[in-house]
Image 1 (cartoon, rainbow, N blue to C red):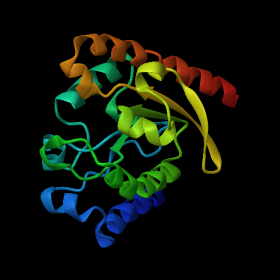
Image 2 (image 1 turned 90 degrees about the vertical axis):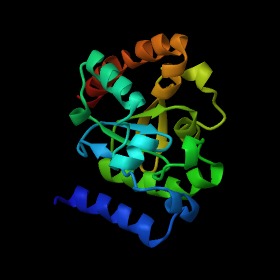
Image 3 (image 1 turned 120 degrees about the horizontal axis):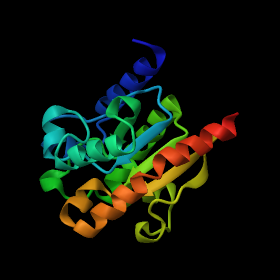
Image 4 (image 1 turned 30 degrees about the vertical axis):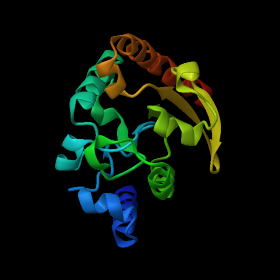
Length: 196
């Protein structure tokens, strides 16, 4: 295990040892930390695991995850290129929205994950993850528009997108999400140019 893996495993242990969100932990089968490339420049953050994620212990493996994989492929990426996680690491009962106190309880652990991975771009999937990085914003107004913010001792670019699950139930959102997703390669290229 390399240093990053060890530090990420420590976060998992700390969540369990500190009994974070005990009501959710009681009803969940698995703690769903994240999956993918821990040396990536791009991290996707959803809101909370669903039924399939809870069963497998992996994020975005249900219908929304399949749609996410399709969009990644369309943008010339695959899962092994990115890291994906959620703010809340346990499944809320009946897939309800995570509560404000649940998001607040897990937020410090997400911050630690990001500080270890140190991505250049954070793609928020849905309003629950977006509002922590871009408070007071409405996803309907800023989806697909990159925003540069200070995060700890670094600057990162936040790209707010609709959640893939929302697009599964709303055909109009599906086209919007695909269009927004297609901007990601350009945003990545622009950031690479800045580095030079």
